[in-house]
Length: 98
Image 1 (cartoon, rainbow, N blue to C red):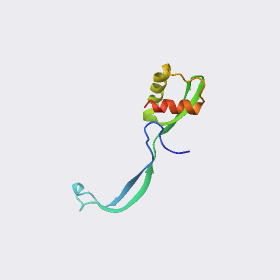
Image 2: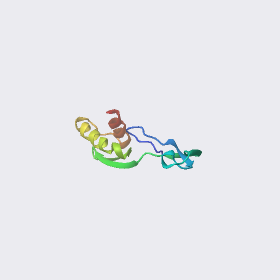
Image 3: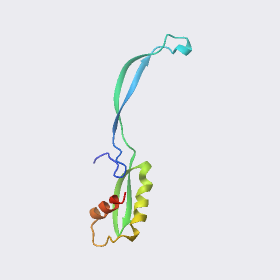
Image 4: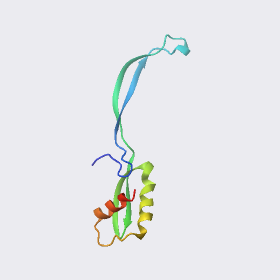
């Protein structure tokens, strides 16, 4: 299962943590020195949001900061003719509204 938000496209990104040693100049030292970098991944805060549209339940994997947009899509789809479509087709139609 991919770690990508279906609405915003947020995905894991690389970040570096910096390891230092020494005493800061403002504390009376000669300054801190960088002794290394450690690579790590920051992943989006994904949540599953399930909504019911045209009698079918549809699940979205979205970032928590964009979960409210799923409900906005459902509100926008009220006038659309979605009867006779399967869940995958309904999901594609909803995502095309963005």
